Length: 218
Image (cartoon, rainbow, N blue to C red):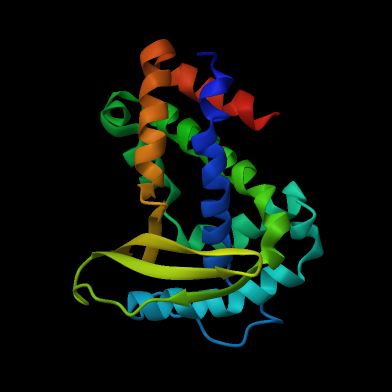
């Protein structure tokens, strides 16, 4: 398999929709549009619901995002998604045992490259944000004192069946952060772990970084 083909698979394209839903759920509303305060240290379902209620309208009003403007999407990711997502943990778990073999420089390069892949993956899907009419967070049924929880949601779409989306969150000193997402019973980290392992076995960690960066330039 060629380097870039591993990252243009049907599985990756499937996750364009899931990362769209994550972006919609996690984008904190711009200050001028904010209606409900978001407390990262609230109960996990309360936290996600508050962000979702604000975010959906904010994203729908941003015409640049709906046009797939990558610069604008990057700006929103830097300002509004990163505070609520642990990209480093997502990348570390996706790399699996190979993470321990990577140098500090390789780890940072891999995080940056993977972040670029995820941004580009859902940038096109964001143009369809108007199809999402509502995000309903399900009642939380886990241990409220746990440090690692799953929040379940139902995303209602106007022209398609509703989609069940689960978010895995960890409790940090700064509050809850999302690091994995499940759609169609496939967790994102597990999906990419298989692709990462294949690429690393073929060309090493540097080869994986190069393949991600090459795909990001397309």
